[in-house]
Image (cartoon, one colour):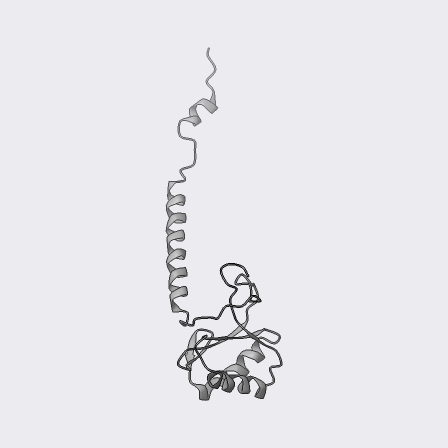
Length: 141
């Protein structure tokens, strides 16, 4: 009598089909690439000036970002906001995130007259530290 191996019989159908998993992963990659592009496009179109001491764009801290456009429009965390509502909105953000850095992204063509009301509002609600966002030149300077 010959012995039949159980292992030999199971080899025929053994193995894991990873094709569906690869398909799902590829779909997720495409989805996140598309969402990332949409998020970049949603950002307020502000041309940031360049300086040698600019911030690192890979910073992991969640700051409160105030954008000031060339025409004086104010953006709070990428949403356009009415200047009359700025004080209340900032108070809420500062109280929810105490210690979060407050960064002002002013367009390089914006005048100080556009920036001053924002600074006055920050002073009125008690913000003592404000960072102005600039970019390092491409040459590294």
